[in-house]
Length: 307
Image (cartoon, rainbow, N blue to C red; front, side, top):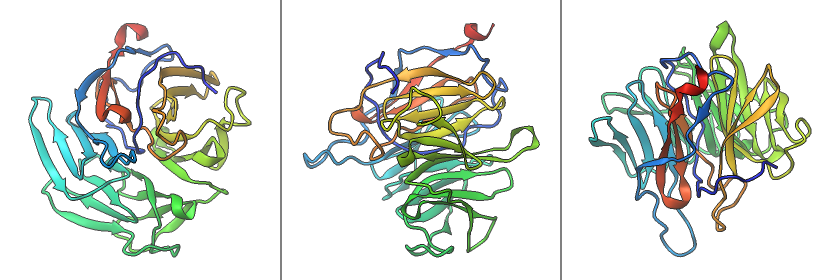
C-alpha cells in the first residue's frame, strides 16, 4: 500500500483517451507536478439524500484543451476563455472518452452513445442489457482508437468488448479471469497495439493479459490496491489512478513514482464505487476529479523537472 503524504479528498470516475497532439511527446523520467492543485471547476455532484449518493463526475480533454465534464445530469464544455456550454442533459455517465475528432463517447448504464461535434447523438453499442456479444451489462471504461474501433470495459460481464466501426455486434478483446474491470487504454504508439486493463478487484494492471503492476508483482501493493483508470504515454510510461492516489510506472526503470496521494472520504467505498478520473492538456498539466468536494483540480506540470 502506498504511503500517504498529501491529504486531498478526491474520488470520481473513468478511463479516458488523452489528447494525442501534446507539445511534448511525453514527460521525462524525472517529471514532477506541483502538488498544490488549483480548483478550476466546482459545485459539482452535490450530496443529495443524506445517504451519500452522488452523481458521477467524469472528465476528458478535447484537442483544443477544452475540458469536458460529465456531472449533475449534464455534459458541459469548459472553454479556455471561460465560456461554458452544455452539450447534453438528462444523463448520468459512468465513463467518457473523446476521440481524435472530438467526438464524445459516454455511457448511460449498459448503452454507449456517441455525441458528435454537430450535437447529434447515436447509439454505438448496448441496445439491451445482457451477456451476448450485441449486449452490455455495465459499462465502466471506454477507449476509441485511431481507426474508430471502440473498446468497452463491461464490468458486469467481466470482459473487454471490441466494436469495429459501425458494427452492431462486438468481439471479446479480453476476459483473462477479470474481476470488475474499470479503466482501459490501447497503446497505439511505436506502430504497436497493446491493451492495458485495470483489473480492479484482482488488484492489478494487465498488459495484453499479463500482470505488470499490482499485487504479486510489486511488494508495495496488496489487496488495498484497486486501480481505477489508466493512461500510457509515448514512451510506454503507465499512469494509474486508484483509491488513494495517482502514480506512474516506467517499464524500463521498473519503478513506481507517486504523483499525487489523497485520502478517501470516509463515506466512499475505497475500492470502486467512486473511481478517480484524470486527464492531461497539451502542456502535460494534470486534471483530477476531486469527488469529495465536487470539483476538478488542476496540477501544473513542472517543466523545469525535465530540463
